Length: 497
Image (cartoon, rainbow, N blue to C red; front, side, top):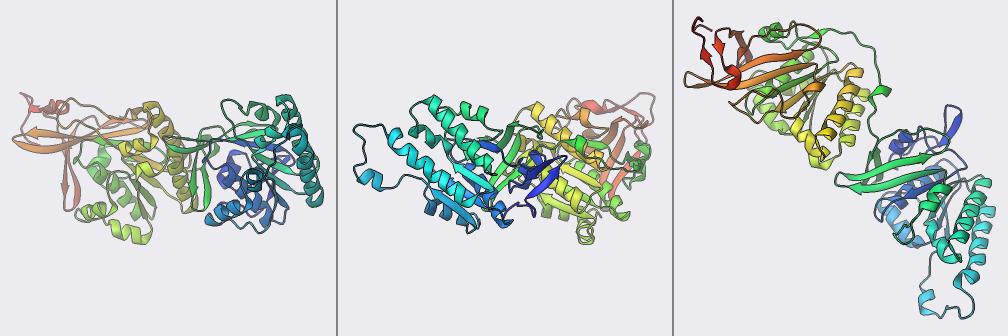
Protein backbone atom coordinates (compact mmCIF):
# COMPACT_ATOMS: atom_id res chain seq x y z
CA UNK A 1 0.00 0.00 0.00
CA UNK A 2 0.96 3.59 -0.48
CA UNK A 3 2.92 5.38 2.23
CA UNK A 4 2.30 2.86 5.01
CA UNK A 5 4.87 2.35 7.72
CA UNK A 6 6.34 -1.01 8.73
CA UNK A 7 5.34 -0.69 12.34
CA UNK A 8 2.02 0.39 13.74
CA UNK A 9 3.02 1.68 17.16
CA UNK A 10 6.03 3.84 17.91
CA UNK A 11 7.20 6.02 20.74
CA UNK A 12 7.27 9.81 20.42
CA UNK A 13 8.79 11.08 23.65
CA UNK A 14 6.80 9.43 26.43
CA UNK A 15 3.58 9.06 24.39
CA UNK A 16 3.07 6.00 22.20
CA UNK A 17 1.74 6.59 18.69
CA UNK A 18 0.03 4.56 16.01
CA UNK A 19 0.50 5.24 12.32
CA UNK A 20 -2.28 6.69 10.21
CA UNK A 21 -0.85 4.78 7.25
CA UNK A 22 0.24 8.03 5.57
CA UNK A 23 3.84 8.94 6.34
CA UNK A 24 3.41 12.67 5.64
CA UNK A 25 0.44 12.86 8.01
CA UNK A 26 2.37 10.93 10.66
CA UNK A 27 5.14 13.52 10.34
CA UNK A 28 2.65 16.34 10.91
CA UNK A 29 1.29 14.49 13.97
CA UNK A 30 4.79 14.00 15.42
CA UNK A 31 4.61 10.24 14.89
CA UNK A 32 0.92 9.43 14.54
CA UNK A 33 -2.26 9.23 16.59
CA UNK A 34 -2.33 8.77 20.37
CA UNK A 35 -3.98 5.39 21.06
CA UNK A 36 -7.45 4.97 22.57
CA UNK A 37 -8.61 8.43 21.58
CA UNK A 38 -11.11 9.68 19.00
CA UNK A 39 -10.32 11.95 16.05
CA UNK A 40 -12.60 13.84 13.71
CA UNK A 41 -11.85 13.82 9.98
CA UNK A 42 -13.82 16.62 8.34
CA UNK A 43 -14.06 18.15 4.88
CA UNK A 44 -16.31 18.68 1.92
CA UNK A 45 -17.36 15.74 -0.29
CA UNK A 46 -14.49 14.53 -2.46
CA UNK A 47 -11.66 15.69 -0.22
CA UNK A 48 -10.55 12.14 0.68
CA UNK A 49 -12.09 11.42 4.10
CA UNK A 50 -12.98 7.77 3.38
CA UNK A 51 -9.65 7.16 1.64
CA UNK A 52 -7.84 8.38 4.76
CA UNK A 53 -9.91 5.93 6.79
CA UNK A 54 -8.91 3.08 4.49
CA UNK A 55 -5.24 3.94 4.94
CA UNK A 56 -5.76 3.89 8.69
CA UNK A 57 -7.63 0.55 8.81
CA UNK A 58 -5.48 -1.38 6.32
CA UNK A 59 -2.29 -0.30 8.11
CA UNK A 60 -3.66 -1.78 11.34
CA UNK A 61 -4.82 -4.98 9.63
CA UNK A 62 -1.42 -5.43 7.96
CA UNK A 63 0.18 -5.32 11.41
CA UNK A 64 -2.15 -7.90 12.96
CA UNK A 65 -4.56 -5.46 14.59
CA UNK A 66 -8.34 -5.77 14.48
CA UNK A 67 -9.80 -3.06 12.25
CA UNK A 68 -13.52 -2.26 12.14
CA UNK A 69 -15.27 -0.12 9.51
CA UNK A 70 -18.71 1.09 10.65
CA UNK A 71 -20.35 2.33 7.47
CA UNK A 72 -23.48 4.36 8.01
CA UNK A 73 -24.03 5.59 4.47
CA UNK A 74 -22.04 3.91 1.69
CA UNK A 75 -22.65 0.22 1.00
CA UNK A 76 -19.86 -2.31 1.55
CA UNK A 77 -19.70 -3.31 -2.12
CA UNK A 78 -19.10 0.33 -3.12
CA UNK A 79 -16.41 0.76 -0.46
CA UNK A 80 -14.68 -2.44 -1.59
CA UNK A 81 -14.87 -1.43 -5.25
CA UNK A 82 -13.42 2.02 -4.59
CA UNK A 83 -10.75 0.56 -2.32
CA UNK A 84 -9.75 -2.00 -4.94
CA UNK A 85 -9.29 0.72 -7.55
CA UNK A 86 -6.82 2.45 -5.21
CA UNK A 87 -4.93 -0.75 -4.42
CA UNK A 88 -6.19 -1.26 -0.85
CA UNK A 89 -6.36 -4.83 0.47
CA UNK A 90 -9.57 -4.87 2.53
CA UNK A 91 -9.60 -8.59 3.30
CA UNK A 92 -8.37 -8.02 6.87
CA UNK A 93 -11.05 -5.42 7.71
CA UNK A 94 -14.30 -6.20 9.53
CA UNK A 95 -17.39 -4.28 8.47
CA UNK A 96 -20.51 -3.33 10.35
CA UNK A 97 -22.90 -2.28 7.61
CA UNK A 98 -25.56 0.08 8.95
CA UNK A 99 -26.14 1.88 5.67
CA UNK A 100 -29.73 2.31 4.40
CA UNK A 101 -30.96 -0.60 2.29
CA UNK A 102 -32.97 -0.30 -0.90
CA UNK A 103 -35.98 -2.05 0.67
CA UNK A 104 -36.40 0.94 3.00
CA UNK A 105 -37.70 2.82 -0.03
CA UNK A 106 -39.64 -0.03 -1.68
CA UNK A 107 -41.27 -1.32 1.52
CA UNK A 108 -43.60 0.63 3.77
CA UNK A 109 -41.37 1.42 6.75
CA UNK A 110 -43.01 4.63 7.87
CA UNK A 111 -43.94 5.13 11.50
CA UNK A 112 -47.42 6.40 12.26
CA UNK A 113 -47.25 6.63 16.05
CA UNK A 114 -43.56 6.84 17.02
CA UNK A 115 -40.73 8.91 15.55
CA UNK A 116 -38.07 6.96 13.63
CA UNK A 117 -35.53 7.87 16.32
CA UNK A 118 -37.54 6.03 18.95
CA UNK A 119 -37.95 2.89 16.85
CA UNK A 120 -34.52 2.61 15.22
CA UNK A 121 -32.10 3.89 17.85
CA UNK A 122 -32.09 0.93 20.21
CA UNK A 123 -31.43 -1.73 17.52
CA UNK A 124 -28.77 0.56 16.01
CA UNK A 125 -26.92 1.01 19.30
CA UNK A 126 -27.30 -2.67 20.10
CA UNK A 127 -25.74 -3.66 16.76
CA UNK A 128 -22.67 -1.52 17.41
CA UNK A 129 -22.34 -2.64 21.01
CA UNK A 130 -22.55 -6.32 20.04
CA UNK A 131 -19.96 -5.94 17.27
CA UNK A 132 -17.51 -4.08 19.48
CA UNK A 133 -17.93 -6.65 22.26
CA UNK A 134 -17.39 -9.47 19.77
CA UNK A 135 -14.33 -8.05 18.00
CA UNK A 136 -12.66 -5.86 20.63
CA UNK A 137 -11.24 -3.77 17.75
CA UNK A 138 -7.96 -1.86 17.96
CA UNK A 139 -8.97 0.57 15.24
CA UNK A 140 -12.43 1.85 14.34
CA UNK A 141 -13.47 4.06 11.45
CA UNK A 142 -17.01 5.50 11.53
CA UNK A 143 -18.22 7.01 8.24
CA UNK A 144 -20.09 9.34 8.83
CA UNK A 145 -21.05 9.75 12.48
CA UNK A 146 -23.48 12.56 11.63
CA UNK A 147 -26.00 9.90 10.54
CA UNK A 148 -26.65 9.55 14.28
CA UNK A 149 -28.45 12.90 14.16
CA UNK A 150 -31.40 11.24 12.46
CA UNK A 151 -31.72 8.63 15.22
CA UNK A 152 -31.93 11.11 18.08
CA UNK A 153 -34.74 13.42 19.05
CA UNK A 154 -32.77 16.69 19.29
CA UNK A 155 -29.29 18.18 19.21
CA UNK A 156 -28.75 17.64 22.92
CA UNK A 157 -29.56 13.95 22.60
CA UNK A 158 -27.32 13.67 19.53
CA UNK A 159 -24.32 15.16 21.31
CA UNK A 160 -24.94 12.95 24.33
CA UNK A 161 -25.31 9.86 22.13
CA UNK A 162 -22.21 10.63 20.05
CA UNK A 163 -20.04 11.31 23.12
CA UNK A 164 -21.26 8.12 24.80
CA UNK A 165 -20.58 6.18 21.59
CA UNK A 166 -16.98 7.40 21.30
CA UNK A 167 -16.29 6.80 24.97
CA UNK A 168 -17.62 3.25 24.70
CA UNK A 169 -15.20 2.55 21.83
CA UNK A 170 -12.21 4.11 23.59
CA UNK A 171 -12.95 2.28 26.85
CA UNK A 172 -12.83 -0.94 24.86
CA UNK A 173 -9.26 -0.11 23.75
CA UNK A 174 -10.08 1.27 20.29
CA UNK A 175 -8.57 4.29 18.57
CA UNK A 176 -11.34 5.94 16.58
CA UNK A 177 -11.46 8.00 13.40
CA UNK A 178 -14.87 9.35 12.46
CA UNK A 179 -16.05 11.55 9.62
CA UNK A 180 -18.83 14.10 9.44
CA UNK A 181 -21.15 15.53 6.82
CA UNK A 182 -21.54 19.13 7.84
CA UNK A 183 -24.05 21.50 6.25
CA UNK A 184 -24.90 25.15 6.83
CA UNK A 185 -28.07 24.05 8.61
CA UNK A 186 -26.32 21.37 10.68
CA UNK A 187 -22.60 22.19 11.23
CA UNK A 188 -20.23 19.84 13.01
CA UNK A 189 -18.80 22.34 15.51
CA UNK A 190 -20.14 20.31 18.44
CA UNK A 191 -18.24 17.22 17.27
CA UNK A 192 -15.03 19.21 17.00
CA UNK A 193 -15.30 20.05 20.70
CA UNK A 194 -15.95 16.43 21.64
CA UNK A 195 -13.08 14.92 19.67
CA UNK A 196 -9.47 14.62 20.86
CA UNK A 197 -8.23 15.96 17.55
CA UNK A 198 -9.38 17.31 14.22
CA UNK A 199 -7.91 16.48 10.81
CA UNK A 200 -9.31 18.93 8.28
CA UNK A 201 -9.25 18.15 4.56
CA UNK A 202 -9.84 20.89 2.03
CA UNK A 203 -9.12 22.06 -1.48
CA UNK A 204 -8.02 25.32 -3.01
CA UNK A 205 -6.64 26.72 -6.23
CA UNK A 206 -3.35 25.04 -5.28
CA UNK A 207 -4.96 21.61 -4.87
CA UNK A 208 -5.95 19.48 -1.89
CA UNK A 209 -4.87 20.59 1.58
CA UNK A 210 -4.70 19.07 5.06
CA UNK A 211 -4.52 20.83 8.42
CA UNK A 212 -4.57 19.70 12.06
CA UNK A 213 -6.09 22.60 14.04
CA UNK A 214 -6.57 20.52 17.19
CA UNK A 215 -4.63 17.63 18.75
CA UNK A 216 -4.91 17.02 22.48
CA UNK A 217 -1.89 15.79 24.40
CA UNK A 218 0.77 16.76 21.89
CA UNK A 219 2.05 19.46 19.59
CA UNK A 220 1.74 19.06 15.83
CA UNK A 221 3.67 20.49 12.91
CA UNK A 222 2.15 23.84 12.08
CA UNK A 223 1.37 24.94 8.57
CA UNK A 224 -0.97 24.65 5.64
CA UNK A 225 0.07 21.26 4.29
CA UNK A 226 -0.46 19.95 0.77
CA UNK A 227 -2.21 16.70 -0.08
CA UNK A 228 -2.66 14.72 -3.28
CA UNK A 229 -5.16 11.96 -4.07
CA UNK A 230 -3.41 9.55 -6.43
CA UNK A 231 -4.18 6.16 -7.95
CA UNK A 232 -2.54 4.65 -4.86
CA UNK A 233 -4.38 6.68 -2.22
CA UNK A 234 -3.31 9.82 -0.37
CA UNK A 235 0.09 11.50 -0.34
CA UNK A 236 0.71 14.28 2.20
CA UNK A 237 3.45 16.88 1.84
CA UNK A 238 4.08 18.74 5.11
CA UNK A 239 5.18 22.34 5.16
CA UNK A 240 8.97 22.48 5.30
CA UNK A 241 10.26 23.74 8.67
CA UNK A 242 13.96 24.46 8.09
CA UNK A 243 14.80 24.88 11.77
CA UNK A 244 14.33 21.15 12.31
CA UNK A 245 17.19 20.30 9.93
CA UNK A 246 20.86 20.93 10.44
CA UNK A 247 24.17 19.47 9.31
CA UNK A 248 27.75 20.26 10.12
CA UNK A 249 29.79 21.41 7.12
CA UNK A 250 32.99 23.29 6.41
CA UNK A 251 32.65 26.82 5.09
CA UNK A 252 34.80 27.27 2.00
CA UNK A 253 34.80 29.10 -1.32
CA UNK A 254 33.42 27.27 -4.35
CA UNK A 255 35.02 28.09 -7.66
CA UNK A 256 33.10 28.69 -10.89
CA UNK A 257 35.99 27.36 -12.94
CA UNK A 258 36.26 30.76 -14.65
CA UNK A 259 39.26 32.59 -13.09
CA UNK A 260 38.05 36.10 -13.94
CA UNK A 261 34.61 35.40 -12.46
CA UNK A 262 36.16 33.98 -9.29
CA UNK A 263 38.28 37.12 -9.09
CA UNK A 264 35.13 39.26 -9.15
CA UNK A 265 33.71 37.12 -6.31
CA UNK A 266 36.88 37.25 -4.21
CA UNK A 267 37.53 33.55 -4.74
CA UNK A 268 34.05 32.24 -5.54
CA UNK A 269 30.81 31.72 -3.64
CA UNK A 270 30.79 30.19 -0.19
CA UNK A 271 29.39 26.75 0.53
CA UNK A 272 25.97 26.84 2.19
CA UNK A 273 24.99 30.23 0.75
CA UNK A 274 22.26 31.40 -1.65
CA UNK A 275 23.26 33.05 -4.94
CA UNK A 276 20.80 34.80 -7.23
CA UNK A 277 21.83 35.07 -10.88
CA UNK A 278 19.68 37.76 -12.46
CA UNK A 279 19.37 39.01 -16.00
CA UNK A 280 17.23 39.22 -19.13
CA UNK A 281 16.56 36.35 -21.50
CA UNK A 282 19.57 35.16 -23.46
CA UNK A 283 22.13 36.82 -21.20
CA UNK A 284 23.69 33.52 -20.07
CA UNK A 285 22.23 33.03 -16.58
CA UNK A 286 21.81 29.25 -16.80
CA UNK A 287 25.18 28.86 -18.48
CA UNK A 288 26.85 30.79 -15.66
CA UNK A 289 25.12 28.63 -13.05
CA UNK A 290 26.09 25.36 -14.72
CA UNK A 291 29.75 26.39 -14.61
CA UNK A 292 29.63 26.08 -10.81
CA UNK A 293 28.16 22.59 -11.26
CA UNK A 294 30.79 21.62 -13.82
CA UNK A 295 33.53 22.61 -11.39
CA UNK A 296 31.75 20.75 -8.55
CA UNK A 297 31.68 17.61 -10.70
CA UNK A 298 35.44 17.85 -11.08
CA UNK A 299 35.65 17.67 -7.29
CA UNK A 300 33.37 14.60 -7.28
CA UNK A 301 30.42 16.52 -5.81
CA UNK A 302 26.78 16.03 -6.82
CA UNK A 303 24.53 18.81 -8.11
CA UNK A 304 20.77 18.97 -8.66
CA UNK A 305 19.18 21.13 -11.34
CA UNK A 306 15.43 21.82 -11.37
CA UNK A 307 14.21 23.23 -14.68
CA UNK A 308 11.00 25.22 -14.46
CA UNK A 309 11.33 27.02 -17.79
CA UNK A 310 13.54 24.97 -20.12
CA UNK A 311 13.50 21.37 -21.31
CA UNK A 312 16.32 19.02 -20.35
CA UNK A 313 17.13 18.04 -23.99
CA UNK A 314 17.53 21.71 -24.92
CA UNK A 315 19.80 22.30 -21.93
CA UNK A 316 21.94 19.26 -22.77
CA UNK A 317 22.37 20.27 -26.42
CA UNK A 318 23.16 23.89 -25.60
CA UNK A 319 25.61 22.99 -22.82
CA UNK A 320 27.51 20.43 -24.88
CA UNK A 321 28.00 23.10 -27.56
CA UNK A 322 29.91 25.29 -25.11
CA UNK A 323 32.04 22.54 -23.54
CA UNK A 324 29.91 21.81 -20.47
CA UNK A 325 29.67 17.99 -20.47
CA UNK A 326 26.14 17.68 -19.06
CA UNK A 327 25.52 14.14 -20.34
CA UNK A 328 28.83 12.89 -18.96
CA UNK A 329 28.08 14.48 -15.59
CA UNK A 330 24.69 12.75 -15.52
CA UNK A 331 26.22 9.39 -16.41
CA UNK A 332 28.81 9.76 -13.64
CA UNK A 333 26.10 10.65 -11.13
CA UNK A 334 27.52 14.11 -10.40
CA UNK A 335 24.46 15.84 -11.85
CA UNK A 336 20.73 15.11 -11.73
CA UNK A 337 18.33 17.13 -13.91
CA UNK A 338 14.60 17.26 -13.33
CA UNK A 339 12.08 19.06 -15.48
CA UNK A 340 9.33 20.56 -13.31
CA UNK A 341 5.87 21.45 -14.56
CA UNK A 342 4.88 24.18 -12.09
CA UNK A 343 1.11 23.69 -12.35
CA UNK A 344 1.40 19.95 -11.63
CA UNK A 345 2.63 20.22 -8.07
CA UNK A 346 2.42 22.35 -4.96
CA UNK A 347 5.40 24.16 -3.43
CA UNK A 348 5.18 21.77 -0.46
CA UNK A 349 5.44 18.79 -2.79
CA UNK A 350 8.40 20.33 -4.61
CA UNK A 351 10.14 21.02 -1.30
CA UNK A 352 9.59 17.42 -0.19
CA UNK A 353 10.98 16.13 -3.51
CA UNK A 354 14.11 18.23 -3.02
CA UNK A 355 14.41 17.08 0.58
CA UNK A 356 14.18 13.39 -0.40
CA UNK A 357 16.98 13.90 -2.93
CA UNK A 358 19.24 15.69 -0.46
CA UNK A 359 18.64 13.24 2.38
CA UNK A 360 18.62 10.23 0.06
CA UNK A 361 21.31 10.46 -2.62
CA UNK A 362 22.87 13.68 -1.35
CA UNK A 363 23.60 16.97 -3.05
CA UNK A 364 26.14 19.78 -2.80
CA UNK A 365 24.63 22.35 -5.19
CA UNK A 366 20.96 22.91 -6.01
CA UNK A 367 19.98 25.19 -8.86
CA UNK A 368 16.38 26.35 -9.41
CA UNK A 369 15.93 27.66 -12.95
CA UNK A 370 13.95 29.86 -12.68
CA UNK A 371 12.10 31.71 -9.97
CA UNK A 372 9.22 32.79 -12.24
CA UNK A 373 8.36 29.19 -13.04
CA UNK A 374 8.54 28.32 -9.36
CA UNK A 375 6.19 31.18 -8.58
CA UNK A 376 3.52 29.60 -10.81
CA UNK A 377 3.31 26.65 -8.40
CA UNK A 378 2.63 29.06 -5.53
CA UNK A 379 -0.37 30.71 -7.21
CA UNK A 380 -0.35 33.34 -4.51
CA UNK A 381 1.08 36.77 -3.90
CA UNK A 382 4.62 37.97 -3.49
CA UNK A 383 4.54 37.21 0.22
CA UNK A 384 3.73 33.56 -0.50
CA UNK A 385 6.61 33.29 -2.95
CA UNK A 386 9.21 34.71 -0.59
CA UNK A 387 7.94 32.67 2.39
CA UNK A 388 7.98 29.31 0.58
CA UNK A 389 11.26 30.00 -1.17
CA UNK A 390 12.84 31.26 2.05
CA UNK A 391 11.91 28.02 3.86
CA UNK A 392 13.35 25.86 1.07
CA UNK A 393 16.58 27.86 0.80
CA UNK A 394 17.01 27.95 4.57
CA UNK A 395 16.60 24.17 4.75
CA UNK A 396 19.18 23.65 2.01
CA UNK A 397 21.75 26.02 3.50
CA UNK A 398 21.26 24.42 6.93
CA UNK A 399 22.20 21.14 5.25
CA UNK A 400 25.38 22.66 3.79
CA UNK A 401 23.96 22.86 0.26
CA UNK A 402 24.90 25.77 -1.99
CA UNK A 403 21.83 27.24 -3.69
CA UNK A 404 21.71 28.97 -7.08
CA UNK A 405 18.48 30.76 -8.04
CA UNK A 406 18.07 31.92 -11.63
CA UNK A 407 15.82 34.96 -11.95
CA UNK A 408 14.86 36.45 -15.29
CA UNK A 409 14.42 40.21 -15.39
CA UNK A 410 12.02 41.77 -17.86
CA UNK A 411 14.30 44.61 -18.90
CA UNK A 412 16.76 44.18 -21.73
CA UNK A 413 18.47 47.54 -22.10
CA UNK A 414 16.49 49.78 -19.77
CA UNK A 415 17.04 51.04 -16.22
CA UNK A 416 18.77 48.45 -14.06
CA UNK A 417 16.80 46.23 -11.67
CA UNK A 418 18.57 43.60 -9.57
CA UNK A 419 15.63 41.18 -9.60
CA UNK A 420 12.00 41.32 -10.70
CA UNK A 421 10.88 38.67 -8.20
CA UNK A 422 11.61 40.63 -5.03
CA UNK A 423 13.80 37.88 -3.58
CA UNK A 424 17.06 39.81 -3.32
CA UNK A 425 16.86 39.76 0.49
CA UNK A 426 17.13 35.95 0.36
CA UNK A 427 20.46 36.14 -1.43
CA UNK A 428 23.89 36.04 0.13
CA UNK A 429 25.30 36.80 -3.31
CA UNK A 430 23.78 38.53 -6.34
CA UNK A 431 25.36 38.17 -9.76
CA UNK A 432 23.68 40.15 -12.53
CA UNK A 433 23.99 40.09 -16.30
CA UNK A 434 23.02 42.85 -18.74
CA UNK A 435 22.69 43.37 -22.47
CA UNK A 436 24.26 46.59 -23.69
CA UNK A 437 24.52 48.15 -27.12
CA UNK A 438 27.95 49.48 -27.94
CA UNK A 439 29.43 50.32 -31.30
CA UNK A 440 26.34 48.95 -33.05
CA UNK A 441 26.75 45.54 -31.37
CA UNK A 442 24.77 43.76 -28.69
CA UNK A 443 27.15 42.75 -25.92
CA UNK A 444 26.85 41.20 -22.46
CA UNK A 445 28.28 42.46 -19.18
CA UNK A 446 28.25 41.00 -15.69
CA UNK A 447 28.85 42.29 -12.20
CA UNK A 448 28.48 41.48 -8.52
CA UNK A 449 25.87 43.49 -6.69
CA UNK A 450 26.05 41.81 -3.28
CA UNK A 451 28.24 39.42 -1.30
CA UNK A 452 27.59 39.01 2.40
CA UNK A 453 30.57 36.91 3.41
CA UNK A 454 33.43 38.94 1.93
CA UNK A 455 34.40 41.89 -0.18
CA UNK A 456 33.87 41.77 -3.95
CA UNK A 457 34.87 43.60 -7.11
CA UNK A 458 32.75 46.66 -7.93
CA UNK A 459 33.77 46.90 -11.58
CA UNK A 460 31.80 45.41 -14.47
CA UNK A 461 33.25 42.99 -17.00
CA UNK A 462 32.22 41.87 -20.44
CA UNK A 463 31.02 38.29 -20.69
CA UNK A 464 31.06 36.16 -23.82
CA UNK A 465 29.70 32.64 -24.37
CA UNK A 466 32.10 30.72 -26.61
CA UNK A 467 32.68 27.14 -27.75
CA UNK A 468 34.97 26.78 -24.73
CA UNK A 469 32.43 28.09 -22.24
CA UNK A 470 32.32 31.47 -20.54
CA UNK A 471 35.00 34.05 -21.14
CA UNK A 472 35.11 37.10 -18.86
CA UNK A 473 37.13 40.17 -19.75
CA UNK A 474 39.22 42.50 -17.62
CA UNK A 475 37.27 45.18 -15.72
CA UNK A 476 35.53 47.76 -17.92
CA UNK A 477 36.87 50.75 -16.02
CA UNK A 478 36.43 53.22 -18.89
CA UNK A 479 32.71 52.78 -19.50
CA UNK A 480 29.89 54.65 -17.84
CA UNK A 481 26.11 54.35 -18.16
CA UNK A 482 26.25 50.55 -18.49
CA UNK A 483 23.36 49.93 -16.10
CA UNK A 484 21.14 52.30 -18.05
CA UNK A 485 21.73 50.23 -21.18
CA UNK A 486 23.39 53.12 -23.08
CA UNK A 487 27.12 52.96 -22.21
CA UNK A 488 29.67 55.49 -23.36
CA UNK A 489 33.36 55.98 -22.76
CA UNK A 490 34.37 58.60 -20.27
CA UNK A 491 36.36 61.52 -21.71
CA UNK A 492 39.54 60.62 -19.88
CA UNK A 493 39.39 56.88 -20.45
CA UNK A 494 41.17 54.76 -22.95
CA UNK A 495 39.06 53.00 -25.53
CA UNK A 496 40.89 49.77 -24.84
CA UNK A 497 39.17 46.83 -23.08
